[in-house]
Length: 149
Image (cartoon, rainbow, N blue to C red; front, side, top):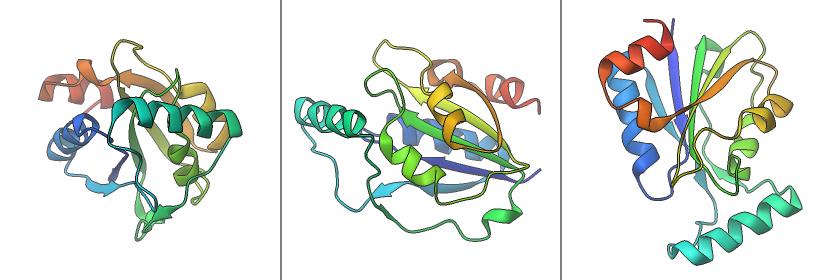
């Protein structure tokens, strides 16, 4: 198995979990970066995120994954925004063909738990596995159990 850990992190929490998963799996990290950064103030970011969700927007991204076809498993991490994944995750998904790949999801949150799976399944041809609460991925043993390692 070859793992790609792609993540969008607004505050740094998702990045920390992605880095932990990369250490356990030996996978490659790819940060999903918008061409136009989200506001740093939480209230303004929440307004922008809601507007994107309501418009079904696809924010532009910086960079692409090299040798995407080489990965068997793609782990995608994101913060929970408005009870789903940020629209930037859909921008990422629509750039690649996930056919034949296992797609593992995890999300960070401030109380909304695991979200985003259904929306991601609508936009991804891979085998999308239910999003995991990042609070349950703090230990190496938890990550191994989640991924079946």
